[in-house]
Image 1: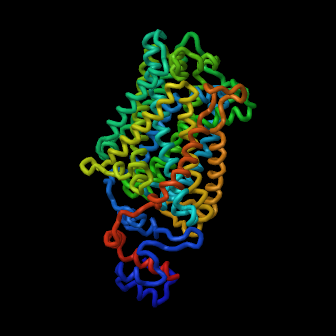
Image 2: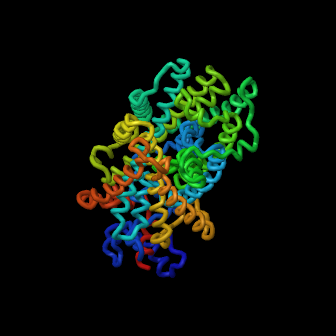
Image 3: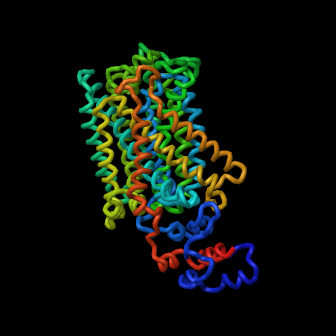
Length: 569
């Protein structure tokens, strides 16, 4: 590739075969692979639009192809869509949404969903430009000023890893609640749900998910297609069965449109406005989250620069629209006794709604299907976790990185990273033993740590990294890109603050406290201290595992010419 502004001399130079030795000797070139920016210093030359294939683009990013590319565009979409889970996820978060009435459930979903889409659009530009499994911490290093590169990259890498693990914890906690609610329904309420039983089921689910996710990459990619179909079938059954159940019921009627779209309740001591934010925004940003999982599958995706943005934007849009419709159906078909739904004997508001409308047998059947799809959610998020952990360990960002970053060649899968994530989830999940409020921090911890990890690289790209940002296959253009990106950054900052607040304003006790601020603060501050006193000797940011000879072979002469031209400007 030659510079469009090259003179005839430049054209002659581009026809000259440049070797790695000659490039390293030429002044002012400092590296075979990098260009220098005034704001961010020396960074890898990466151009997703001109790369001939995924292997060449990954080499420009700095890595060799270690995992097999089995994921099609629809399967990349499936990873994120499966993690969102939609109906199982909504079942898990009704306990958060209903204390604000139907206004929070329905309109909170619609409004917050729009802003979540701006997050996805902004992230898609980053992912399309540099599709690598490390993703967020790599972008942070790439766009940060020289003195802050390593520290910020390290903190974001740890925050993103924690967020994904907390996401697995919250998914499996919801799954444990669904399984136990099935038992309660089957035993006609003659079964007591305890913290110990909840953790026991949670641990069993986590181990089972680890076993499934340890399968070869081919099987995991096919699992995403199966998960898409399963979730869509489940939603279709829900849309048909629940209204029919209410229509046939002799003790329930459909709620009016004024109730569905206008019922407001405040079951807390917060002001109405802040309660709407807590109960209306929190559910949707938990459900439509983890779309960065598409980024973590970049090195297994075919045509990653296009497939990853498709997966991110597609999954958010589909879940936003379908989720809005699900919320409307729930509002139309549920009892008006919201306090009774929340305090029902099944320990699961969704199970109570299904039972009230459809009876015992249908409630059991539908909850079994929901639990099954939630298990698929957990398998998908552990897949994404393993890729993030593997990528971060590859760059020596984690303890025991030398052990964790090993890829099982036979299965073409990072098995050790998978089980590292599962073991961490088992440890963090011990919060289940404390009680409901402590375990609810799993949900808000997942959100706040994720939003921090999304916001930092985007903020750096829009400030220090503007001059070196080279769009990939997805780009919103010079007008819409900054508007969407800055909207996304503002929303992410707001959500990080929102997640630190407890569900009640007064009379906070150890049992009712929101522990998110403790956990996230510990991780962020601990990461800084760990880096300052130890890890800065080891972690130098994203490290290439390609030799110069391998790099030359993978990227080709056009890229070498482009680097030479850029460095001599």
